[in-house]
Image 1 (cartoon, one colour):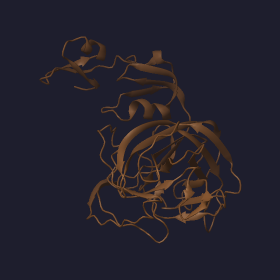
Image 2: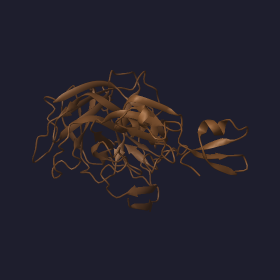
Image 3: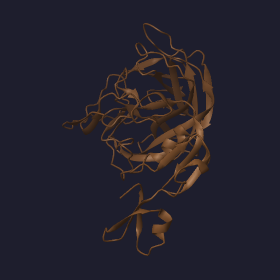
Image 4: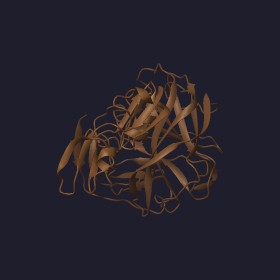
Length: 353
């Protein structure tokens, strides 16, 4: 994975309108919980600016040459594009959100294509059963907020084909109402003021979606008062085409600031072991295990098998690691339980030395 560091001078274009529509952000780095750069702290991003406004901004960025989902669960990955790690645009995607310039336009949808470059990439050949994305919740004045649940409606649409390659929103192929899994991966400072949390969401769909290409939309539903969901951006080398519309008029609008970060995966059932906690879930899947047990720990602490929990070798919770004292003198090859039995010692983690 190639990384390049870009350092830019900051030039912020702020306006009242920008503070009310899809926003600009400068995040605060969170406590490191990164597995192989799977969730690197955002250095800068922005909410979608109104028509005619671009909003100049600067940042120090870790940029990844388009790896096409290199940070997705690789064993179950079908297609994806990684979350942005620098400047970019977040898009409102919430059935409670209305256009600030025209409050009669409500129930905001935002859609991304699959495969990422829908005009040229080959069609996918496996049924879609798993999906993940990044996002945030904010109020109208750019402050973080909490939804009663991580409740979403996910829909899949056919593609119109050339020349526009746009979603056919007059009808959908599949629609699911789901409660997503979520974990906090960063804290975001909005350019217009205020702060909110950056979430990683993932879900296993109730049934597979058999489509070779098309578009999907993810919206927060049911609507909540003054608390809106936004989809996080991607700079992973897609086609920089995002479609948005309000259900009150269904007028499609193309946005070309950047893409949306996502992973689409196939369903591989099995058992998931978290060697940090020693817990094994016999009713998991490879896609979910990556996010719930593996990602966010260094070294990785999650293991997955298509068999039963009893098939792990060593058994879940018995993976050895370094047991250390306050002076940082360590004894290798100790389990967590054995280390915790020693007064004043702490376990560094599975597979550590």
